[in-house]
Length: 348
Image 1 (tube, rainbow, N blue to C red):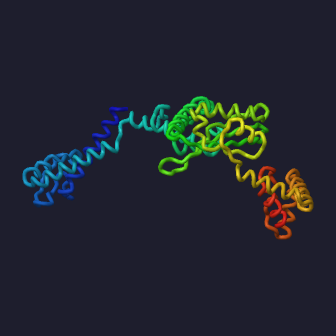
Image 2: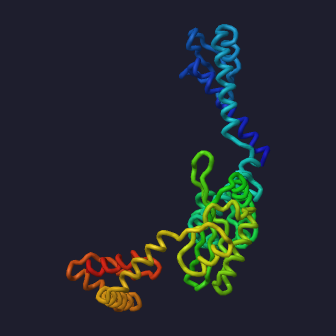
């Protein structure tokens, strides 16, 4: 293969060189073995056989009679040969351009890092790399990149990324000695409870910083002692002593208040949680409002749990020209969702 390729390249180079020479000569129509110099009007012989005529005599004529033109000719041929070699890579280079990148290739490393960031930021499952549509997209966009398995992402890449992020956060935490720590407990749709611990501070350049230090699973009762144990463990891990805590921000429930009291940390109740409790008590204190709220929740729940009823509702909306919006259900932990629920029902 290499010999054939080299022969083809030599042939093409010769053709290109011949084409450059013919810029200064014209073939005689009557006798193809002769060429006329366009600069000197001199006819030169190119050989006896018209099927095997060369350009040597024409080149010699240019070098003797037209030296400057001959130098330009040589320069042009050199440029053309260099361009030809650039445009014709070796066979091994052509094969290498289609081979998959190894895992330690800089481009492969950059792509897998970006892939992990996408999964983390967009809350995508690791199994996205097994999805056929995603694999086709990547194969078209970056043919030389082999997607990693979800096991490799979760066991190796995620752990490496976690270590790098932890090191970055640790260095940032070391730069300050005054923190506001916020605590939050919530329950997932799978009824798993979590404690979130977030550190907030302002840098010397007055730039606000915040990092989630932990999202700890609450597998035991939500007692003040259990929450306190988790909190102190998180603070110890990040080398944040209690004297560095300017304020502990918490919700208004009794177990959180006891955590602040037992740790003797300066604390404050979350304004949004306090506002939620005020609105909730205000609604419950008015029987008429409470009755409307309960009836509205039942109406929305009926359509949310019955596909047949929801389809019927959509047909009615289209028939009488109503805006085809979904009904909204109230979330017990968000007071404004009660307002949105009533507004949407009023719209319909």
